[in-house]
Image (cartoon, rainbow, N blue to C red; front, side, top):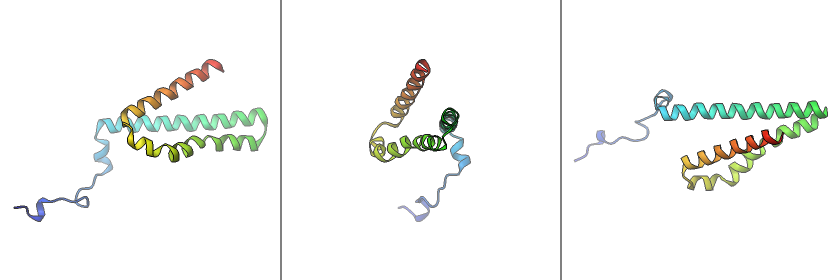
Length: 110
């Protein structure tokens, strides 16, 4: 016979940040994500500064910065349902490889 004490609910068990970061895979993934996001932010700001330096147009610089958020807006709204059905690890690897390939091609043509 089960007693009430043997059953745990979500309210009884709470994960703390310390507990989550003790998982090595999560910590590595979190650090990689933070580094990737910082790289994206630096690239967006650098591109905006470059556009301003070349054109001296605040409007074009603002448009450049605004358009840098477009992939997040469209990707989040249009691809979120598809991403929920895909395998997470494979999706992350394919997306990272696609980003690195496009960045590499950009360096070759620039």
